Image 1: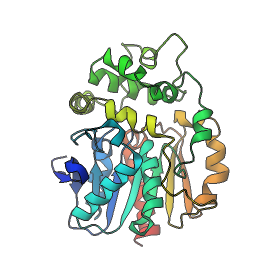
Image 2: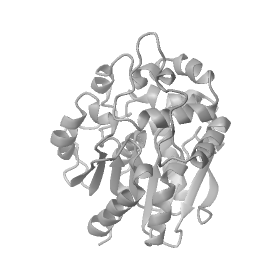
Image 3: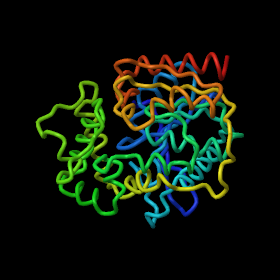
Image 4: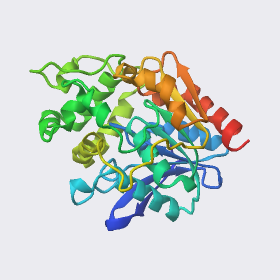
Length: 318
């Protein structure tokens, strides 16, 4: 971990955003995009492994996450803002093109980036969810059960009150335990999402107390205000210019699916992966890891690292 360099890049509005960077001598660059409740640290295994294989790995804390400054107004935490921040970071590092690696809502960030700046994308890898066309989430949102965590946390004030009962470390602990399971986190009408976790439940075996301390300390600093706005309260955000019908992304892509990822039980997701994803991304390869959970890159780092390396060598930099 000490090999990873940490720096801050100033973006529009004067925000200083945290960037983790390793392998800077290489011009083969991957940009890692985290989900929730993750930060740059969730990519630690991939960054170190890929740098040893001759690649440069860059991971960011989005605005309002981890060590990055929050925007003065919560409404300035949007997918469009995050993509603009990423472009500014790449420009400051003199990186013209990248392979994007996204997980969970980081896949939405990668989707927006692909559509807005296709000239800077060599290919992409996604985990936890497949590529989705930006601004086309209304049907997904409407299909979610009322007690599902996404539905609950989209309600202004509800998650703030729920998380406010606990310290940041406990919130992260509970989410990691919940999201590591294979069932959808759905609360009954008179319960909250945090109530679904038994306080005595152990952490997943691949997530240590040291890992939890790292996450907890950073969320204690940043809080959860921005994290609730983006992604949960921005899922229906629209592009200024809508994506044309039938749009295709003509770059190599890899989708890594954990066989025990709870998101596979979301309405329509398996059908989308099996029947629709390649209509948008024709050069898509999908790999299933039978024991993989929602946090597959942390749970099974060696398998995930090898899949990414094989993809890079075969499809991006032969």
